[in-house]
Amino acid sequence: MIQRWHILGAGAMGRLFACKLLRLGLEPVLLMRAGSSRRETLALRFDGREEAYHCDAIGLPELQASSIEGLLVTTKANHALAAVQSCRAAITPGAPVILLHNGMGVLEALAGSGLHLLAGTTTEGAYLDATTLVHAGLGETVIGREGDSAPQWFKPFSESAERISWTSEIDNALWKKLLINCAINPLTALHRCRNGTLVDNPVLRAEMELLCEELAAVSAARGNARGASCALDWALSVVQRTAANQSSMLQDVLQGRETEIRYITGYLVAEAKRLGVPCPRNEALLRQLDSAAASH
Ligand code: KPL
Image 1 (cartoon, protein in one colour):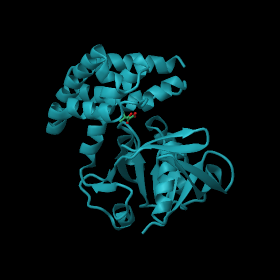
Image 2 (cartoon, rainbow, N blue to C red):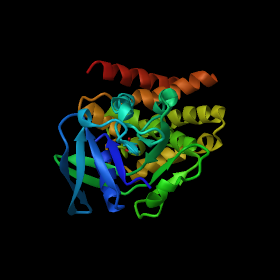
Image 3 (spheres, protein in one colour):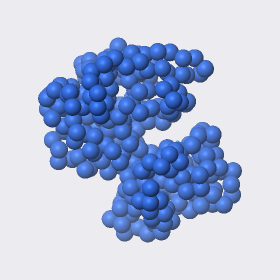
Image 4 (cartoon, rainbow, N blue to C red):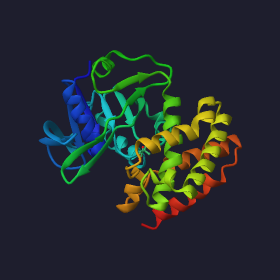
């Protein structure tokens, strides 16, 4: 059993998972870029009610070697690699390192690092409203390592009411989320619209359908039959469930932050090239949003 989990990425998702771990009776420690050891108060709003949670926080420079027994990485994909490297020396050999972000490619980039890597994907919705963490939508989280059954330390997670489950087919789960993000995030970021506009506006809906045809073709070439037949249905169902939301990529664009486009559409386009599948519409979106990112 791992009692003390370090959380790298103290944004909305990192804080939400800190609250979840506290509810499981575990001891999360938020890793901060700077500052010294302290207690943090997390104000969590859910369903109109506010609750305060308290957990430890520590600045990265203060981390001791081999002090991390379990690491949950909740940074955006574009920061994950550098973030993990910044605390590499503190990670105990064999400690689970769970990557929980949109997009794909970081796991591969860390493959030779000697870390015990796992991945996860979540549909939880959370954002920071000044200092309050708003848990905007209940979602599901799946965590796993391809081909592995759930380890002993996972028991508190799976036995909890936090909707966290184990999968031995994490590649399929990550690919499914990648397709959904490819269909929704770039279009909403480019047109600066909420997710629901992708079904309400016929032009955008047609564009999303064409994107999904390409996503289905890449899935088929990758041997992912579910992705090949369900890409559009998955995207439509998430658009409907999150109609009022601003996608994470739109939020990044509006706040002048670098987006995760290279790990979302960029990963898809690289896979399409490797497999010899044309996907001009996804390529065009990648070009548009990547140059938008570069001009910030
Ligand atoms: O994951 C998301 C995101 O915004 O990054 C979706 C599922 C599209 C919800 O907005």
